[in-house]
Length: 222
Length: 222
Image (cartoon, one colour):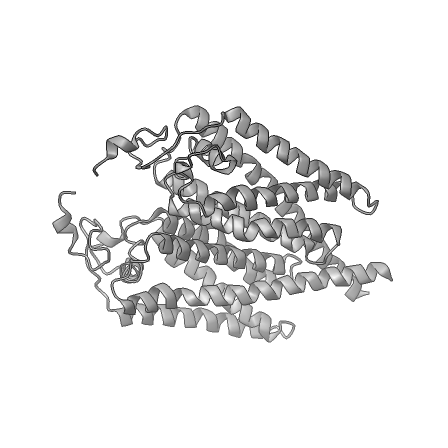
């Protein structure tokens, strides 16, 4: 392909990845992570404090509300921006959301390269799982009968997304990180919480639902 | 790429798809469908008749058992073969499972072309959803407290898989069918049941779980 020399100014692997008009990151790695960390801490604190006003909500449920608020906003804002911004890597000003994905692409260049499996998983996550996560915050407070079902459904979606994300990369050669540091920090590390926490919440929700059916069976037997 | 003239002996679209040592179908479309239809009818009849011996199982549950047995065996046998047989299109004898995918690739050449998103979705479907579907047959008969949760989980997995399947194709240009006939018959038609039926079962399972929590709430209130 002509112009392949021009595209190689980007920092990503594989070097052949063609990204015309790529503009490098403006913000440092630490500033990007600091903004995300502070914003997340703010969201979590707000949910934790406001949910603490109701004595009826258990500590576990308050922690779950914090997680669902944090993950829901991450899905909608960060992943939603990526899913619908195919040209984020061309952004000529230090726009935070574009910076996030320019930086994250060092751990997985399929983001800058617009791999269709990655875009699809991120689109589903942003459009369906994001709003559903925020609904889970409400469902827990309002003690809705669909609360555990909703939490289980979102967790299974997150885990399906993780599986597609990691297996497609493996099948395509697992060579999309700029260096082992970015591979472990971004590709593995940043996704780690979204494997472990949904697994734990899915198991908990599953058990709660089974317990409700057990109770129903017993009350019918009496 | 050299040898592209040789690869164009296959019937699939895009014509550039490189499939060295491709061997054409031995069986006709109607024989392939007839074998699948008769085998499925046999499975469904066996489950329908044997489940009818227990007067405790409702007709709806018996129909669900038929579906779960049919879809579970389809996932494990047909899709399981595809997921782990990257060279099925080279098969030199009329081996039924290879014939199925040689034929289906006329509706979606990403199967013969080993698209990583398709292989991943089929792998998840075969390895996780197949056995889970068969477990659902047992869970319904044995009235397990996780019966609806399991059915919901498998349905959501099937629907997530459908979404990845159709959206990745759309993002890659939706040009993988040999003709409009194969596009509508295989790519749309053959997948149609796995969109409609899981949606219906998911909604039903969701409602049943909510009802169990409502009942639990009421029995606690009394």
